[in-house]
Length: 143
Image 1: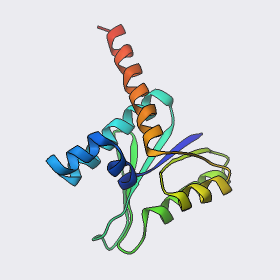
Image 2: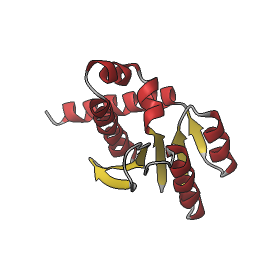
Image 3: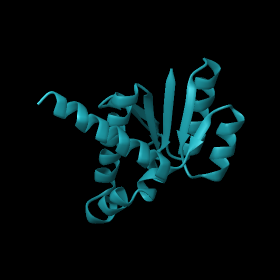
Image 4: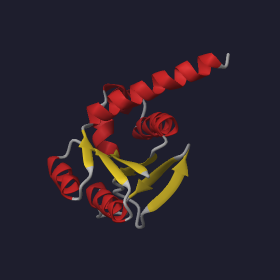
């Protein structure tokens, strides 16, 4: 299985459209937009997509599936980086093909050491845009 694991806030702060939402609307709006766009990537590529966000307030971690995307919030005091490493490690142990989207250098080295691929937040955006364009073509075929 192909797994795409996304460092949520790293991407929110790297994509201009999400950064704009952050300042013009809210953090929640930026997160929601990211999840919505990642759902298109998952649908088009068939990849299992997980996005991880740091939570500075929750006493326990939480996870839910939104539009086909696994959305995880870490518990207070635990970083998204640690959760991503754990998810990537577990996936590598069952033979999943792993791609982690982050611009964090330490995270990149750790994932590569597990045999996973790493892409930058901007490369992820490029792939999402391609998926959105493909989705648009699919919709036009059925109109």
